Length: 489
Figure (cartoon, rainbow, N blue to C red):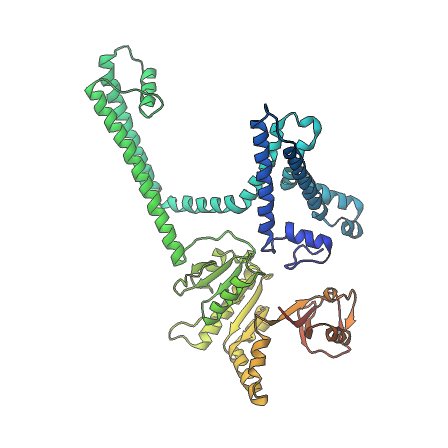
């Protein structure tokens, strides 16, 4: 089973993995919510039983709790089943390797949490009713995934931003401590006139009482005066500290709005370079496409913030390697470079900036799939020959070919638009296994298959990523090739 697949795999294991573990399934969160609700219900029943342990509890509550326990057992068995490909590990390596992989999952953190939740099932542990609270740990596991990661990232941003205010903060803290020490000495002097036997230790306890640990107050006028100064210094320190935090938070939000976000510690994201009419449409489709909705989208441009919900805006020159490193380009899965044209800029300059961007991306990480938009086809030769970019889109060439085809075949333009449309009958890709072919086949066999199915096969892309449109009938297609076809969505 391909665990990196972005679509659901065939078979029972593929179905279970898609809904329980696959990070490419946007609807998996609903399964997590259902599990969380069941866990919360289990914890509630445990609390109810502990609270009513001296009274008669209805029998149906115990039966219902047993049903929840069975659910947890089934969940653990399913996760144990889909954790590794045991049979494939035996065939590809050996039995010992398969057992090692399975044991590695059993002793993983998340699997141990699932196992701990089953402890109350053991009969002799049922006398320790608190063991049932282990199920609550699974709630924390989900909260860690969905909430704490964002919380820690926000805290780290705040701490980094406060580095610029270290001098002001420590000056304020030092001044406040000095005032408190001076006032404390004055308070000790004033109160010792009334109680001459008061020791320094007792005075320290008295100072702690003033901040609310106990109920106490000074007796002399000077003691009250120094106490007032101490409390005022504390209030002033807290007020200034809150003002520093709030002003920094305002600066952070303003910088985020302007695209000055610092280093992005993210992975498996999509980087879009340049904001044009084309990139605007691409962003809309990416945000609406379920296949990409689980990936973060980063937009690098020197234009103003388009203020589009769902993307990370970075203001900068995308051809600058430092800006690319700032968005963690090495961990991205896809980079698209658009022909963003500035005022009074020539077509050649725009294309050369695109070429430089592709070069910097390939230097940082050759494994990233790059798509470059070039205005003039002549300017793309260096990308093909020197830089080895993955895909190049020629704007002028596409326009010219579309117009020529409209001249040759009148009224064909709607058909061309439908071919590239993202709704209705759309382009799809699958490997031969998807159509029921387990070995090499000819294109003629595929054409026979499409007659019986409501699809139109237009070509294929081989394992070396070389595309072939309408190949000959005798062309052999292997199990690693990708078949491109049209089918209703």
